[in-house]
Length: 345
Image 1 (spheres, rainbow, N blue to C red):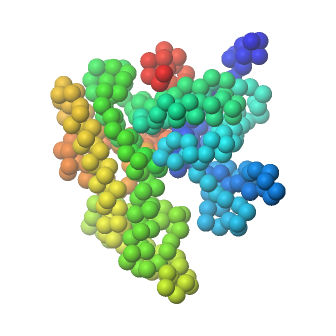
Image 2 (cartoon, helix red, strand yellow; image 1 turned 60 degrees about the vertical axis):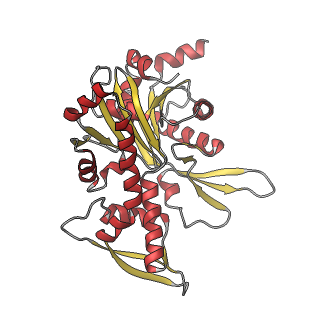
Image 3 (cartoon, rainbow, N blue to C red; image 1 turned 120 degrees about the vertical axis):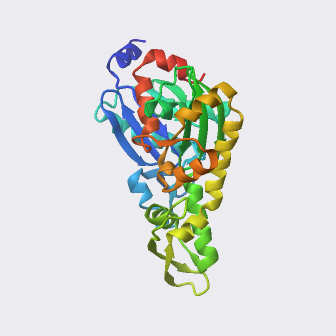
């Protein structure tokens, strides 16, 4: 009891956006203190002694596609939820220690961002992983709600705000009013699905196999959701599927646009479904307020143009789409009255 009181007095409360692709940590009073890939590399111990964590975050991501048989680089968060409890716990512990610097003996209060489609079993798994990793108290916050707050929207007002959060593993669409989610849709398609679509396209057209990191680089360099006036060209290196030797080809932004057509179409359809389930009074608000895009996937060039063509609503990007979710959660962790209103039960 006394130790809990001491922890409550001196701990630095934290907000964590535990994403499929990246994890961001916000410390009260300091802002975003950590932003690294959600990747853990583990060593399979011999003689049945289990697994040992070798690296977490940026260091672990560098190992993807380059490890020997005894080492594996894993993404313990799949589609926004825990796929490997033990590895996720180790990853959260790493981020808690990094965010707290030398104050390792203090157990912080933590707000964790989760997708709206999360089940009760998945909620319990996330809470238990954070508590086992060293959190004193854990609150769960839906990612679209956190994103809306981080984008500067007044979520407690009766007027509607619509947020489209495109992450690595999921796309979450929500209409928010009076501190609650009125209508929402979740799709397990995001930046990772775009990378997979690029890999499949290169394999199909050029008969060449490329790695996960190469596909991501192509998306960042020349990816676009809509054809542009200026065609960009990028060099792609991989392995020839027939000859089995290294191969180099060139692809264009128009080809990558075609490659990503399916995941982009799925995101647009999800926005349509959310709009169809929005009450008429709130739908009227969106004519003026429009749709706010957040998440790393929303940075894809041309996506705002495609959404505008399909919805005829104003499309806005938050000032910092990549960190909007954790920024919003950070505001909540320092505002107890708002935390009680918006946190999941």
